[in-house]
Image 1: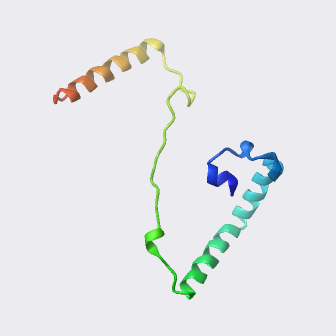
Image 2: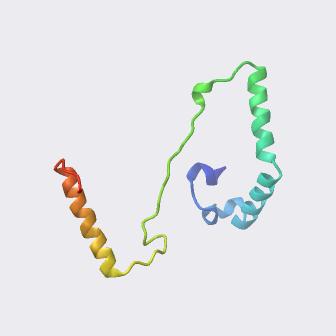
Image 3: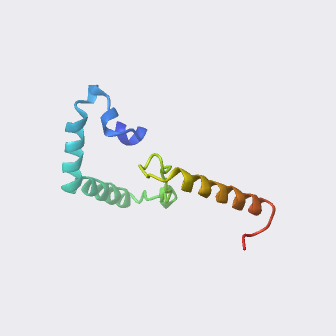
Length: 102
């Protein structure tokens, strides 16, 4: 739970919880075995039985995060990169002045 609360990588789990690889292996085993699905279904059933379902607490996050091309290992010819950056800057300037590209 610490790992999901903090959003940290598995390797950053505090040693006091045990070896990160053991924790990861157990998580994968439980996920493949349907343990988390079973727990969620049981919690939903319990809440429904108590008539304690609050759909205002439901949230769907559709955020997409993309890495910069350097972080993703993309290799671009320096001259091509310079040309692309120049074109992007020119296009940005046109958009800021309310003009569009031809």
